[in-house]
Amino acid sequence: MLYDYLLKNYKAYEPIITADIDLNIPGNSLRPMLKSLVDAGKLCRYDAGIYYLSGDMKLKGLVPISASTVAKCKYIRQRGKTRGYYTGYTFANQIGLSLQVPYVQEIVSNEASAKIREIEIKGQRFILRKPRAEITEENYKVLQLLDFLTDLDKYLDGSVGNVSERLIQLIKDENISKNDIDTYIGLYPVRVYKNLYETGVVYAIT
View 1: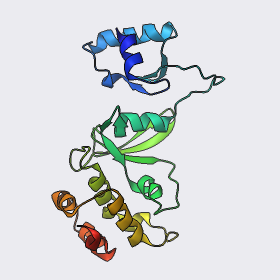
View 2: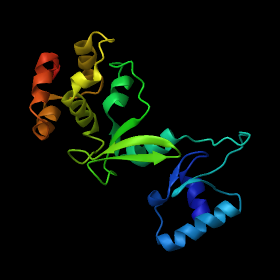
View 3: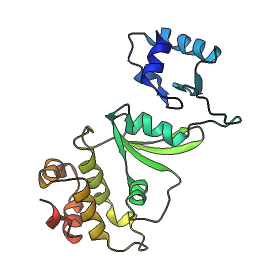
């Protein structure tokens, strides 16, 4: 039953987070079942509570999934459900407003158990933060923007120009509205208002 479920719901090399397995099997029964599949060569164990189905690709001993992929599935998006987003220097680099490639990725997630903590997955470090509001498919883009605007000056290193234009384009691309901003901006410090006006972003929000 478990193996058929995994084959139906996961692709080869897609991280399988134990807590996400949607079967009516208690944890003390699920763990030995997973171990049996690993022992039989039907399933591979990546780390504690994380598995994957092997495929036909020959990788000569290399692990076919990365720590970043696991973090994304566990804390950001897994099987169509949004549970978090990238923030800080990671997000600044993704949107082209910082040329600095961060060694430690920063993530805001509903799965975070503390306001801020550092975690490690297979030797790679991540900073995990709790969100100011529960993250959903509908609000993660505006929360991500407001988080970025909270410490805007911190992420800009002077090597990238047209900051206002880039932020305005981001808002247009992500369809972030004035109502979206108004709903959540009260959860943020006053400097977010300041950065909205100083960048001219506020005038692009409709």
